Amino acid sequence: MNVVPTPLATLGPPFAEQVPTTPLPAPYWVAWNGGLAQTLGLSSIPSLEYLDILAGQTTKPAYCSVYAGHQFGYWAGQLGDGRAHSLGQLKGTLDSWEIQLKGAGPTPFSRRGDGRAVLRSSIREYLASEAMAGLGIPTTRALAITGSNLTIWREQPETAAIVTRLAPSFIRFGHFEHFAAQGDEAALHQLVHAVTAHDPLLSHNTAHAALTLLTQATLRTAELIACWQAVGFCHGVLNTDNMSILGLTLDYGPFGFMDRYIGTHVCNHSDTHGRYAYDQQPHVGLWNCSILAQSLQSLIRDDTAIEGILSQYGPHYRKAWLQRFSAKLGLMSENSDNASLILSLLTLMEREKVDFTRFFRALSSDDPRSTPPLEKLFKSSGDFVAWWAIYEQRLEQDNTSVDECRQRLLQVNPKYVLRNHLAELTIRSARQGDFTMIDTLKQVLDSPYEEHPDHEEWAADPPPWSQQLSISCSS
Ligand code: AMP
Ligand code: MG
Image 1: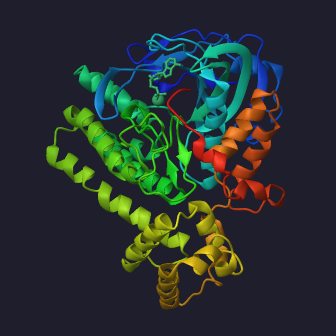
Image 2: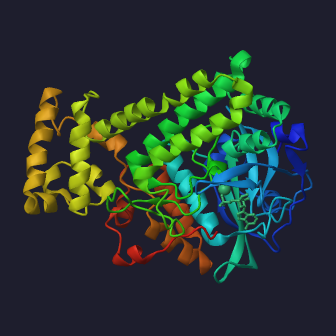
C-alpha cells in the first residue's frame, strides 16, 4: 500500500500527531471490499499483508488530528481523533484517498474512551458507507473490517473490530472550530489550504480561499441533506465534529433509514430531545454551517459576505429537495406546484403509516395501484385517491403518464436501503462467526435501484421486532 502523508500529517503538530496503533490480537477478516480495492489499485483478493496492516499492525507512521465541536447544540471543546488513525493518502486510479483505521486503539484525543470500535458498529458503518455510495449520495467509503475476539465493554461485552474507511479528506467543521477557539489565524489559514489540496473548486480560488471554502461547504451540506431526505436517511448525530468539510456523509453511528414515514422520526435513542429528527436535519445543516462561518470569520472579515453565503443555504436546499422529490414522483419540471403535491403526499403517508421506500418504489411498478403498499391505500383512503387524481393531472401537464415515467422512477427510487433490521440480522450472524451476509447484503446495496430476485425479502416490510430495535450512540 503506497501512501503519502496527508496534508494534516505533513503540517504535523498542532494539527496532527504521530500516534502508534494498538493492533487487534489474533485478527481475522470480517469483510473486504474487493470492488473498491480494485479502483484503488489494490488487489481484489484480501492478503495476509493487508490483514496485518488493517488490523493495526503497521510499521508506517500513523497520525491523529485534533478538532473540536458543538455537540447537541453546545460547545464541547477539544475533541479529536479519539479512535481513528490516519495511515496516509493513497493514490487511486482517479482520485486520492485518505485511509483511516477506526478502532485501532487509544490516542491523545481518546479522553475517557478506549480507542476501540465494536464489531456491531463497524458492520453498520461498513454497510452504510457502501449503501450510500450505491445510492449515489456523497459519503466516506469503507474498504474492510478486521475483527478479533478481544472483549470490548459497552453496555455488555462485545468483540472488537476495525473498520478501514476512506475519504479524499476527513477534515471536519470541527477542525476549524478548534483553531478558531484558540484564536490561531495562521493555523486556520493552513487548514484552509490543507482542504484546498483536495478540491479543484477551491484551488482555483486561492485569493479568496476561505470564502470559497465556506461557500462550497454550505452548498454541499444543503445538497447532501436534500439527498438524505429523499431516501429517508437520518444521520442521528449531526454534531459539528461529524460534518465533513467536503459535504460527505461522515461518522456513521446511530443512523437510520426510515421504514414508515414519520416526519419527526428520531433514529438515535440517545437523542432524547429530537434535535436530530428527520425533519430537523435541514435546519441543523444550516446551524452547523453558521458555526463554520463563525470559525472562518477572522479570515473572511466580511460579515455581509458571510451572511450572503449562509443565505444561499435555504434556497439551495429547497431547490435540491424539490428536484429530488419531483423526480421521485416522475414529475419532469420543478414546477413550484410540485412542492404542495409532495408535502400533501408526505402528510398522507404519515397518517396512513406508509413505508417510505416501498411507497416510492411501488410507483414504478407495472400497475402501481394494485401493488402493495399502494393497493392498500387505494382500498382504505379516499384522501389518497383524491391525491392520486391531482397527481395524474400533474403528470398530464408534463405530457407524461405513470407508465411512461416508470423507467425514470426506477432510477431514483431505490428498492433496497439499509434498514435497521437488515443491519441487525447481519450483526447477529456475524456474532455467530458467519460473515457471509455482510458480503451478500453489500452486493445488493451496491446496486439498490436494480432488482435482486434472490433477495426480495430485503425489500419487504420490516418484521414487527424491528420496531423494538434501539440504536444509541454506543459504538
Ligand atoms: P462520536 O460521537 O463517535 O462522533 O465521537 C465524538 C468524539 O468521541 C470523537 O472525538 C471520537 O473520536 C471520540 N470517541 C468516540 N468513541 C470513542 C472511543 N471508544 N474511544 C475513544 N474516543 C472515542
Ligand atoms: Mg464523530
